[in-house]
Image (tube, rainbow, N blue to C red; front, side, top):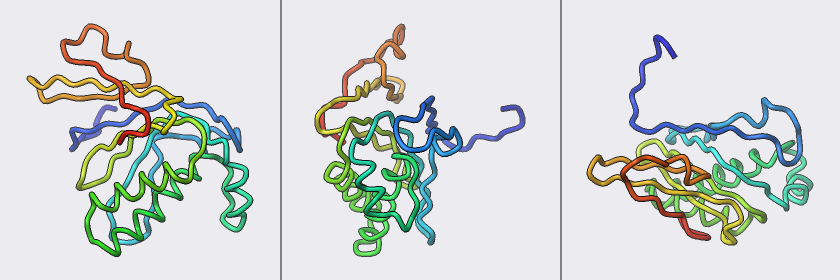
Length: 168
């Protein structure tokens, strides 16, 4: 990353292999940027999981041409976020509504990190807790992090906990 200027205290990274739909590595690259199409904040997501109702969603939305469950997740977030932001003009309200819609519409196991420009980092986990999501905090340094494995924080002097089932 030589020559790249970084202007944020939030970084997302993910190594993910396809779990449904297309086996194309391009379609499954993360973080995925959610395109909202207007003067709305940018949203990026990384996630780990498998949406078991992807084929039903794909059939119901065949005119859009989804070919991986990442696109399904991004579509639900984008549509709900945009509608709620238009109604309320509040990033927090729109984000909460989008995550609630994911909980309602997505079946399977997943853990997700989503960065909403102007709001910050949002972490959430499926209601059954199928995919793990560890949370690290070091209040003395004002640092926090998330990982699918608690071992990622081994040797650090903070507190490691788990995002609970269905928690945002």
